[in-house]
Image (cartoon, rainbow, N blue to C red; front, side, top):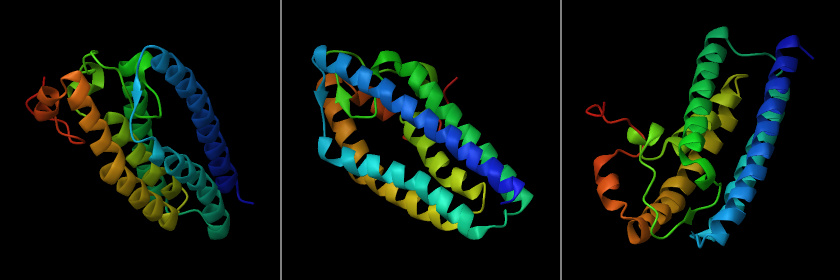
Length: 193
């Protein structure tokens, strides 16, 4: 096993541990939000999301071992930058949402939408971060098939189920329309300062 592969597997281990800790934090937040009267929306897709993200990590390992040889340094470096950008967006979104961050779609009737922090520029920074991560992490070791499959599958769930359900629920209970009309989903608005 090459040194590059060992380092990549260590990176995958770190990301896996991070995700497991986030799942625990999300479960705690979910319990608190439900006790506060939050409403869960579109719970049926959640199992598919969990399966998708777990399989993504496994496929990163499998494709890296199958490849044996690391990709070009340029692809690895570019992918690492994209992964760090994705991580930064996700962590900034988690920070801005505070105890309202969870992996499920929960809305709190009567609570205004979070519009500060990274949400000032992008409507869905967490999802944008995940999109970047799903593509970038496998590409660090040349996992083009894993990157393509899981990025497309994730986008299908995000754009087909999760985002429409979340935005419809927020419009219904949280006066989200004005914010929604003022922000792009994934691309920062130029006129925001």
